[in-house]
Amino acid sequence: MNKALGEMELSLKDINLVLITDFEPYNLEVLRRIYLLNPNVIVLGRGSIGRILKVSGLSSLKFRAVEEIPLLKIKTPTGFSIRVIPINNSPYVKSCMFFLEEKNILFSGKFLGNFNTEDEKVWSIFHRIFFPCKESLGNNIKLIKDLPQEYSVFPYYGIPYSTESGKLSILKEIHESSEYEYVNDHEIVLTILNRILIMLGEEEKENLISSLGSMVEFEEGVPVDIYTSPHILYEQLIEKLAESVKSKDKFFKAIEELSKYPFYIPIWEV
Image (tube, rainbow, N blue to C red):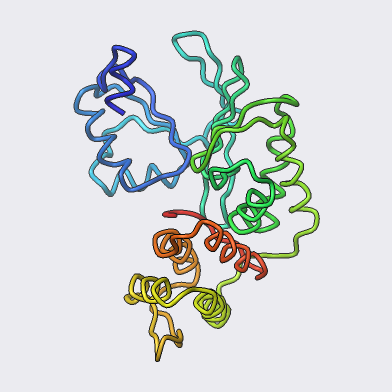
C-alpha cells in the first residue's frame, strides 16, 4: 500500500475514506496505522465489521455500516460517484461491492472472482465451487442488474475482466441450473477429501495430509474424522491443494472433482 501511495505522491495520512468489501484480519493493523496518522478517517463496511472494530480496540474510529444508509452513494473530493451495493457471500457472511460510476468499474470483493485465467472452463469451475448458495446468489444477481450493460469487474481474487466477455452469463446459467445449497456435513467432506487424495501422487498426498493434520484424523492415509467445521475444512483444502500440488493441470482436475459435489464454499481465508 505504501508503495502504491508513494507513486501518487501520497501517504497513509492522506487517506480520508476506507471502503471495506470483505473483512480480513490484517485490516485491523492497517486501520490502526491510518487512524494514528489521520484520526478523522471514515470507514465504511457491513455492520459486522463495526462490531469487530469495537472489540479490537478501534471503537473510536468513525465507522458507518452501509446497511444503515439505504441506496448509499459517495461523492469523492475528485468528483467521482461511488455506489455501495451490500451483498451476501453466504447466509452468514455479509460483504459489499462498490461501483465507480464515472469509470464503470465494479469492485466486487470476493464475489465474482476467478482463478487468474481467461479459460472459461476453469472460470466456471471456480464459480461452481466459490459462489454463494442459490438463495444468496440469486439475490446478488438482482442487485447487479441495475448496473450498466458493460463494465469492468475488479475482484478481490483473480484478474480484472469485462462484462463484455460473457462471463456474467455463465454466472446466470450456474444460478438457473444449480440445485446446490449450503452443506454442513462431516461425511460429505470426508468423502470429498478421500477422493482428492486418491487422485494425487505419493509426495503430493503426503504434503496434503501433513498440512491438514491438525484438522483431520487419518488412519493409514485415509481421512476418518475432522476436528473443525466442514466449511472451514473446505477452505483449507483449496488453499493447501494449491500448495501441495505442483502441476497446474492436476490442481484444476482436483478442483473439477470438487465441483461434482452439491456444496459451496464461503471463501473467507482462501
